[in-house]
Length: 153
Image 1: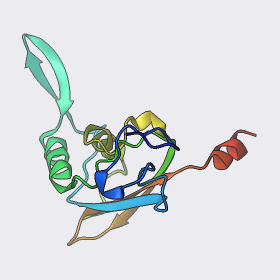
Image 2: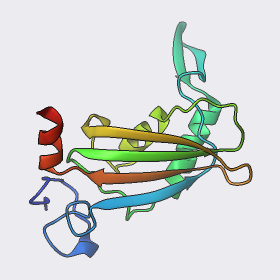
Image 3: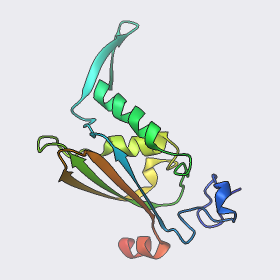
Image 4: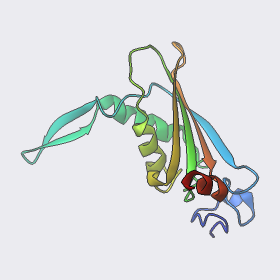
């Protein structure tokens, strides 16, 4: 069954109607991923595969990806296909890391929350500190057609 508003292919059974969670009364979803987000741009490593060098994610980035997958429940897997705004609040355990949220967008896509990260029309990222509780707070909000038209004109 498809959402009649955004044409999303995935419709959670628990909603019981023809509108996905983003397009229904709940225009926004939010959730928290616990753990320390690492930068993708500064943490690539080189491996050799069949004699050729390859760049892959660091061990820390791969661990965050696994942690993300464990913390995402089946209720969050929406496969959102409409244009959206994503707000990411990253809480680091110290002041050193750069704010790099690309790993979050990859995780959202790989875990079936969004269909493609190209559908993210607006990205808002905020850097915060929490020494004892590093985490990432994510909000995904469906954008109305009027909002997009007003930006273009």
